[in-house]
Image (cartoon, rainbow, N blue to C red; front, top):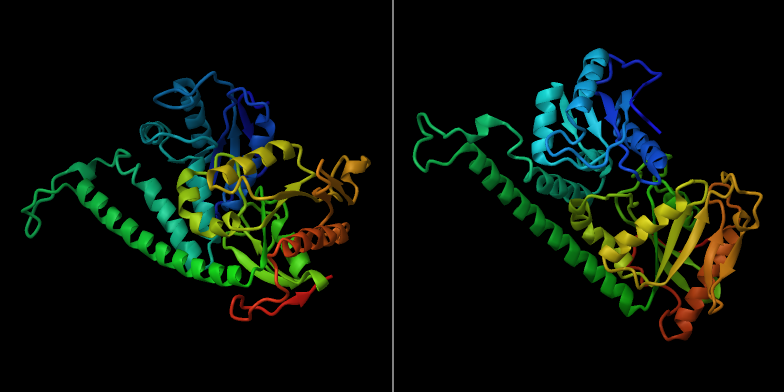
Length: 401
C-alpha cells in the first residue's frame, strides 16, 4: 500500500514536455495495488514522465480538494520539489475540485477521464475514430467551462462586440454546442454506412465474431494470429481504437468475419462509451464474442467483470461468449492444468473457455476448433452460407487453418 509519497527512480527529463506527479488514493478497494499499477501504465501510455507517486488512505473524497487540504499541501510540496508540470489523479474530479486543486498546486491538474481521453486522442487513426474522440472530449469539456477561468464570465464589449450582451462563457458554450452537433451528425452518417455493410453481411448470413476484452489483454495479437494480418499490436493500453474486420475461411464451415475492437478498462468514461457506440455496434451485432483475458494478470477476474459491465451497458450481454485465456506462457500459474493449452465445456457441452498464447501460437488449434464448432452450429441452424460476398469486405478470404 502507498501511505504517502513515493519518489520516482527516474529524474524528470527537461527535454520531456510533461513530467507528472501521480496521485492514487486508497478508498478501501480490494484491488488497490493492481489499480495503481494500471494507473502508472496509463500515464506511461499517455507519454508522461513520472516524477513521483502519492498515495494515502481516505474514507471518502473531500468535497473541495478531493484529497483533503493536508494531502493537497503535500502534493504541492512534491510539485515544487520535482518541478512537475502536471498532477494526474487516478480518480474522477468535479470541476470545482479541479479548479481548487489547480489554484493550490500551481500546476495543471487532470483526472482519470481526461487522461484516458488524451490517450484516445493520440491513438485514433481513422476518420471515424478521430470524430469519436473529439466528440467525447467536447462533451467532457462542456462540464469544465466553469473551471475558474474568470475572464470567460466577463461581458463582451468594445468596438464591434457590443449588442447581444453575450458573455464569453456563453459564446464558448454556444460554439461548443454547434461543434458537438456537427460531429454527432457526421458520426450518425458513418453509423448508417456501417449499418448498410452489416445488412449486406446479414443477407449473406455470414457468421461474425468480435474480439472483446480488457485493454492490453492481447486482442490485436490474437487477431493477427487468426487472420494473418498486421494490425497494430503493442504492450500498451489502448493500442487499438478503430475496429478492424477481416474474413477467414474455415474449410467446410465456410467463411466468417472476425473483428478486433477497442479494449475496455475500469471506470471507462461514459462520454467515451457513448461516442464509441458506433464502433462498438460491431460487438452488439456479433454472433459470438471471444472475450480475451490476460491470464497472467493478478486482476484477471476483476477485469472480466469490468468488461462484462461494459458489454451490458452497450446491450451485448446476451451474445454467446467464449472466454479466451491468453498469455498462458506468461502466467505464474502455468503449472496448473487450467493454464495449459486446452478447452473447457459448459453444462450444455459447448466450449466456454480456451487456453492459449497468441504470441507463441500455442493452443491456437483449440481456438480454431472452437470457431469451426460454433460456425458449423450456426450453419446447421440455417445461418451461414459458405463464402462471403466480395463487396462486403475489403480483403479476400484467407485460409488460416
